[in-house]
Length: 259
Image (cartoon, rainbow, N blue to C red):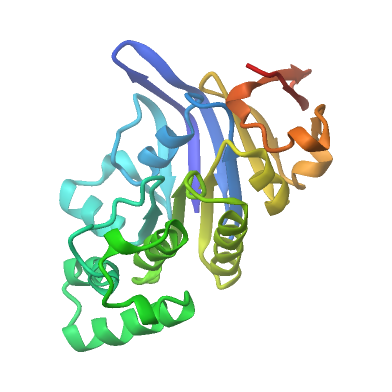
C-alpha cells in the first residue's frame, strides 16, 4: 500500500531524510521512532502530500504522489486520517462540530454526517461531550476527539504524529489501545513516536530513524530486535536523550544517557 523508494528530503540546504526505502502493507501497524529531528514527522508530511520529496518516489495504493495534480491530491487526502501532536482542533467549536468537519468538506449530506458523528463519538466514549467546546476538554478527551475526527470518514490509512506527547501514562495507554483497535478493524496505521514505552507496548514492526537515515526495520517486534541497555526505571527516557549505536546494520543498541 505504501512504498518509499530511495526518498530524500532537503530543507534549506540541510538533508532531513536520506535514501529512505520501505514498504508498508495494507492493514499493517507500523511504529516509526527515533530521536527528535531524525525525520519522523517529515515522513508523515510526505505521506499526506503536505511536503514533496526532494528525491526518490512515494507510492501509495499504486499511485506516485508527485504525479498527482492538485485536485487529485486533495481527493487522495480524504482517504487518509491524521492525528497531530497538538491535535489542531477547532477550539471555538464543539466536539461534534470538529468531528463533522472532514465529512462536511467531502460534501456528505447532513443527515449522514449526524449519524456517522454520533456513531464515532459513541465508540470513543465522547457522546456526552458532543456539545462541549473542545477548549474545555481534558487532555485525554482532546486526544480522543482528534482520533474521532481522523477516522470519521473511514480512511484507508491513519497517521499519528506523537499523539501521546501531552498525555499521562494512563491516557497514553488508552490512546495506543484505540490505535490498535482501529488497526484491527482494517485501517493501516502509521505511528510516529520518540517514547520507548509506547514502542514496547505496541510490540509491532518498528522503523528506527537516526540523522535522517533508516537504521533499523524490525518486522518481528521491538523486543526481539532492539537491545535496550537501560534499567527498568529509565524505560520512559525519550530517544532524544539516548544514543543510537548501530551494529553491522542488523541490530541497534539504544543506550540511555542522562542529559
